[in-house]
Image 1 (cartoon, rainbow, N blue to C red):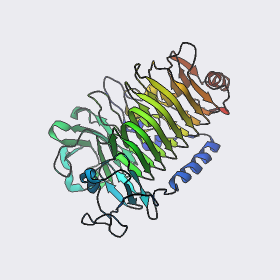
Image 2: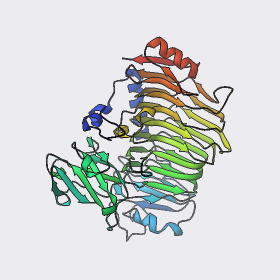
Image 3: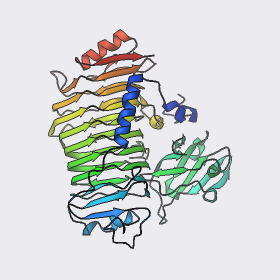
Image 4: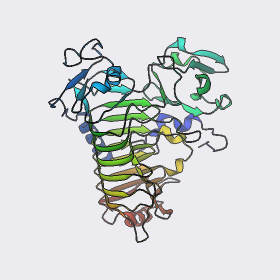
Length: 458
């Protein structure tokens, strides 16, 4: 790759979506397709719920009362502006086959799901399709600009991702006009609410049918929330998190599709964006049967500073093309990490993603646990498939001096024989190699003595 911390230059060829594909194990590919089909056809369990129900459809009207399928609301704004009037035990159902643009907060005691026939309802963080030629102004030298403002005229928060034609091409974020060298390089001048894009072929709206410009927002968000179900929603195209929650209890997220997430600045030097994130307190979390892909950071993560993480189950998810599949970390002062289970997940092609433009691609991994000093109790990772990472299948630190406090049991491991690819970064930052089959097997035996497969792919 042509990237360096000093120049921040990365050619588009390094990030072309054609390079996101990697040939893996044939049997794993079949299992992944079966799991994806199961997720896409996950049943609607909220349609017979007890309590107040509101229906939302792109074919509805905000003048309706939203209380029947025949009188649905039309926009997400109705949820936002009426939050105070909704009681606990309220269910919001979105019509399948509909597309909604925008963001909304979830409320304690409420459920969010789908009704009707067809594909899952789609929620897009990008406010509109920017493939409109009149929006773009020619600045010369192959650079085009547009006004980076929301529909109400407010400046957009930091733009982290631009996706063209449903991800057929992606933008590469730069930090000044002078860095716009290659096609699809972009710079967001947030202070002056301007977006600049390199497009040598002319007005970008004339060469793309769809342009999603993704700013720093979470599509679904909730803070200090509990007793929530999120089911069968499709969430795409935002610069923040797909689902971003913090300080939670009793959360269930199931049957969702989440993709093309992240890339906005968390601070002046660090970009972020996870498919599903629970930050700080996390008690009784169930995340199952979700398909998560193309995330700048992690597919699914629970993390925090001073917090408790207890009774967590992440199971039967398909996570593809994220920098980290499953990510976990807590601060050294966190009191409890207990009863955590990752099982039956398939995590594929970690690091083979548009997020490869990050400053630290060398930490890419299927399962990642950053620094921590809080010892875990009953933390089990079993029966998962970890297939191919640009760097590590497992990136794991441990606070224990007596050995690993997280149990790996019966997982399947597949790694690509390529430069920079390892089995794991282990405990005290020991790199476990995967440069040949024998070395790979030896490395995995340190992680998982009951592994069901250990195969080095060429």
